[in-house]
Amino acid sequence: MPTASSSGDDPRLLSWAALAPLWLREARIGRALIDRAIEATRARGAVGVLPFAVQVAAIDAAADDRWALSVALHDEAIRLARETGQMVRLCGALAGLARVEARQGREAACREHASDALALSEQLGLPFYGVWAIGALAELELSLGRLEQALGWLEQKDCLLAGLQIADPDLSAAPELVEVHVRALRAGAARAIAADYLGRPREKGQPWALARAERCQGMLAGADAMDEPFARAVDFHARTPDTFELARTRLCYGERLRRIKRRTQAREQLRAAFEAFSDLGAAPWAERARLELQATGETARRRDASALDALTPQELRIAMVLAEGRTTREAAAQLFLSPKTIEYHLRSAYRKLGICSRDELAGALASTGGEHAAAAAPSAGPAGV
Image (cartoon, rainbow, N blue to C red; front, side):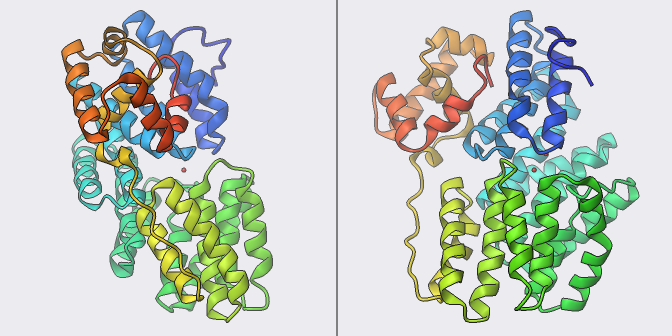
């Protein structure tokens, strides 16, 4: 695999090198490579390479809980791919965007982008991106509590992976299938799927895969034996940057604790899940955790939507760049847009946020959590793959 030193300033090699840490669920490790790739791309004017570099940055952001940034970067990658006629990159960016939108509960947008990605994957012979798109639709249905619809997409996803002979446990739909069958009171089906799946995470030995495997064990264990696998799952999650999966594990644990009348312990897990989902902007998951918490006798208030939610992805991306102190012309050059386009979207962002200056813009991003996304954005432009 190319390293930062061996790949020099070749933006394509740097982008590919950054993918390896993402596949290992070690998103932060590859960020320096992503930054260098985008910086080298812009310095060379290599517009043809930029959609891929931006897509990698978007994947990194999604894997590291920076969802607003990920949506903005995916949107940028889609625009650049269309402008340069790169249909493969377009397919990947659409599928990646649908996955984030599924978690956010943006149902219409998720379905549109997943459908477009599926059509392109079939047209271009890119079944791997089809796996992403199908996974997005499955996760959307699961988050909305539509178990049978989720089951159909999950089975389709695993069938496609089997046809591609891909056995990576990180891509497997088995943990979600186990959850669907457990929630639908089909314990036998859940146990059969888990028995076929659990060896693969242990063989891979990476904490992200092991955490999901232990969650399956916790969902299937008896009431007197479930605490240990759930505890192990939480420990494995602590070694990864993915707060969303940790919150899902806490939600599953809290649901089981509530059902066996251990309400005090259930509240602890459900409260943590609700807060994490709310912070991430995972609206349907936060609502599920809120209702479970309410069933224990504790009331949690729904969070107000962030002001950033009113911005389009392009408005948010432009706002982030300008909030870093760049001029309109510098932002235009960085994002391959005209200064007039920058100013148009800036005015729209001002109107939606109720502000009228760059200083207020930076403050608005900071007060709504956008400072994390903006500060973590690649310095020269725009990483659970």
